[in-house]
Length: 129
Image (cartoon, rainbow, N blue to C red):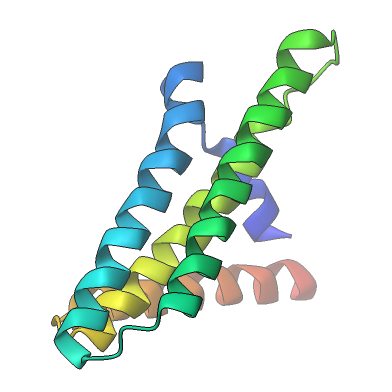
């Protein structure tokens, strides 16, 4: 599958960034969530608490998987996969928050559509070939 092959080619610049980027992404998601809630007048403390608990859960997963990677001699590291997944999820959530805050993100939507189309076409070529 093209998506998996593409993900396997992505590497973090260093173990430091593998650990830190998901935490930064979670923080930016919280900030953009607050911004859009303020703009739209949709503050909901229950929803905010659940969101913050979710972010702390993500950070706990990053720390736990990092401990597994550091503490074992496994032939591969799990952290880049978990960190990549969390970053992707945070990116989508941040884009949703910005869209709900009426920030013009059309250029990003166009780029994502082009990327999806290229991946779909590549998958079709592999099926036919």
